[in-house]
Length: 472
Image 1 (cartoon, rainbow, N blue to C red):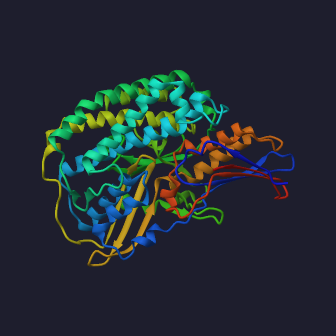
Image 2 (image 1 turned 180 degrees about the vertical axis):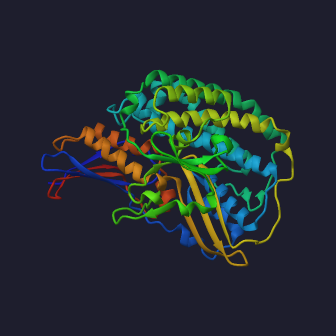
Image 3 (image 1 turned 60 degrees about the vertical axis):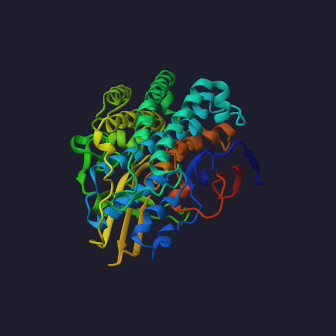
């Protein structure tokens, strides 16, 4: 008979999902499916709109990642205008993206995931949240909240508001950086650096290599953009793919021809598509993106403290870590790198230049904008008519790239912890933790309509539903 267990608090992921666990005759896990049950439709909404509207329009895809979409959209529009944006505009776009990295990574780490591994996977779910974290470690949590607030303030001061800023535009940005805001950034960065140093020290002292295996480990390829020399890149660069040993599979690939190496498959049980590496097919062409992907594909961060921290990280694992839990570790490394990159930008006097936009009309009928959102490589691809009216839009969102890997993580964790059909709240939380490590933005990736809480179904070998556990 169907049994429902309602679990608090909420799942701590953006969007709504469902998991089905299939059991064999012995009651052990045979297979799993991670369902995203929301409707994808935003690409169709864009048809018939003008190119000039697209950055502001696509920013509304998501309230969590508006900066990511506005920048990718503006880059696609730059390609259609066939314009080289002013250097200062590029620097300011980079500045905003780094602010997005800091606020998004701090949100994922301190608010959504740290309660699990700092308070305990089996701890009281009523306290296993940011409020419980405040009670357990008020000083660190307060600093984490202030760190995220700094990232949000960067976005606000550059774009005029924290959510959906209408600032990056075709040809550049619509406002320069003021001297007052520049000074504010310079004065507040040291506190941010101190916070991330302290957090990294706590993380390294609390979680050895064995503890970091709690969410599974498996081989895959990794993808991200890299700058010349293989340096970590977050805004521009060329596509690199490496295998599980760090050997280069693809290097220097033109982002505007992403479709030569990336295609999407679909399954009837989820709206989220499955991007994969074309030569290896589906599902063999699985790769991972995001913090772990970028750290695994790059040679270095190119900044002193982040490079020293990267060397420590690589000393604890192979050249490419396959541990799902290491998404948290690499997220912290990227916060440190983002702070150091901000320091370099702010030290360059060109960042205060008032010339921040190039004017042009429609010169190409197709354009691709790719950059590294916090969750991974984000692709906007537009086709327009001679008047700049969108005829077709295609988005491959960061979370989508990780779909095969998220399914693999759920299966590994379920097989590790579920036996004879028995499941506890703590086991459910570990399964969710495997998803949370990727910090998925499900609404962003499928453009949500409606509501669906996360749900785990336990099904026996005959397909009969044995148990349902729901997060509401």
